Length: 260
Length: 349
Image 1: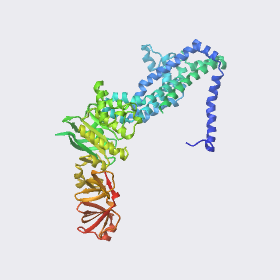
Image 2: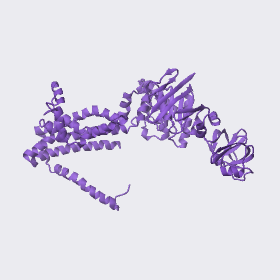
Image 3: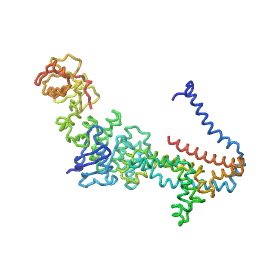
Image 4: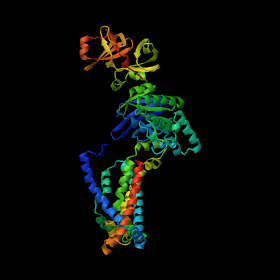
C-alpha cells in the first residue's frame, strides 16, 4: 500500500473525507459528552423511558425473528437458484430502503387497520395492530428486513455450492448439508445481518408512529419530549439511544472484523 | 461381470450436456476419462454421484440401478480438483463427516478415520484446520474423506491439476498406492494427456458429452478411433522403456534402441518427444544433438501448411516439417533419412 505522505491527491481526498466524518462524529459526540451521568441514570429510571426502550428492543427482536424464519430461506434460494422473476424479487427486497417510511406506515395501516383485510383477519385471534405492539413489529419488519435478507444472501453466495455437493456424496441429505455446511459457513453474515436489522428496527420512527403512538417506542418518545418540553429535556434520552446503538454497532464490527 | 454400467445417459445442465453416454467398468478398475476442458467431464462425474437429474438412460452399480437415487444413498466418493474441504471443520472432523452423516457409532468411526489417515500419511494433520494445509495435504485429506465411507465407486475430478509438478507426482503415487491397497473402482477425470498415460490402464476419451474411444493407452495412441482422438492426442512421439544411468548420462532403452534423456529417474518410464523438436535430413546430421538415428520414411501426411513425416528406425518417429522443407529435401516414402533430437527435448514422465 502506498503511504499517504507526499501524495497530494490522497491528502486532499483525506481532507474532504475528513469533513464528512467530522460531520457524523461531532454532533453524536457532543450530545453524549455534554450529558451528565447522574441525569442519564435518572432518565433511565423514568418508567416511561424504561418501558419505551424495552418495547423498542423487543419489538425489533421479534421483527428480526420473523425475518430470520422467512427471509433466511428466501436468501438461500436467491443465492443458490435461478428462477423466473428472481430479479424482481431482489428488487422488492430493496424496496423498503427507498420508500418513505411514513408512507409505509400509511400503507400498512390500510391493510392492517381495523377496516383493513388483514386487520380484520387477525382480529378474531385477539391480535390488533393499531396502537399495539404487533403494529410496531410489522412496521419495523417492513423497513428493516432488507438488511437481513441481503446479508444472508451474500453469506450463502460466498459458500461454494460444491461444498454442499460433497456433503451430499458423503451421506448428508439436502437439509443436513445445509445445516452442517452452508448454514455454519454463512452464519457470520446472517448474524451481522440480524444485528443490522435489529439496530435499524430500533431507530424506526416514521412507519411506527403512524401505526402506534401508544405504546410508544423510544424514538417516538424522544420526539414527543422534544416537542412538548424542549431540547434540554430530550437530550438525555437522545444520549441513551445513541449510546445503546453505538454498543450494538461496536459489537457488530468486532464480530465481523474477527472473521476477516 | 460389469461393475459400473452407464447406459445411454442423457443429461442437460445449462449449456452442457451428455448425449447417449455409455461407459462400463469392471470391479476394481482404474479408468481415466480424458477430454478437453468443456467436454462435460465434471458433469459426467456429478451425474454419476447423483447431483444432476437424468433425462434418460441408466446407471447401475453391482447390478443395482441408482439412476434416480439421491446422492446420499449412493455411497460414491467424490474428490474435486480444488479439494472442497469443509473450512469450519478440523481435518479429523472432515474425515469423519461421512461417518457422522451415516450415524456410524463413535468408536468405529474413530478407528476408520485413523485408518484412512494412516493410508494417506496424514495422521499428523488430524487436529489442523484446512486453511493451514498445503495443496498436496488438502488433496490427501479430500481423498481420505472420500475413502472413509468405503465408497462403491470413487470419482476424482482433476485431482492433480491444482498441484505443482513435484507434489503432483507424489500424490499420483499416493493415488496408485491407495488404489492398489483398496481396489476401489475409480473414475479419474483429467484433461492432461501425460497424467492419463501414467495412471490409467484404461482410458476413455470424451468430447462434447460423448465417448470417443475407450481402450488401453496403446490402443488409443496407436489406433485412434476418430479424428478428434487423433488430433487431441496430437502427433506425439510417445514411448515406454526403461531408464538406466550410465557414465555419459541417463539412457532409455526401447526395443534395442537407446535414447539419451535428462532425468533423475530410473526404471520403467514414459517419454515423449514433440515432433517439431526432431530434425530430419537426407545426409548424416552434423549436430550437437545426442540422439541421432537413421531410418526409412514410412508415411508422409499432408496437413496443409505442416507435413507429418513418419520415420521408422524401426521405432516410428513422427517429425513435423514445413511444406517448403518437404519440397527442398524432396522427401518420399521409402527414402533413407537421418533424424536427430537433443536429450533435453525428451520429456520423461
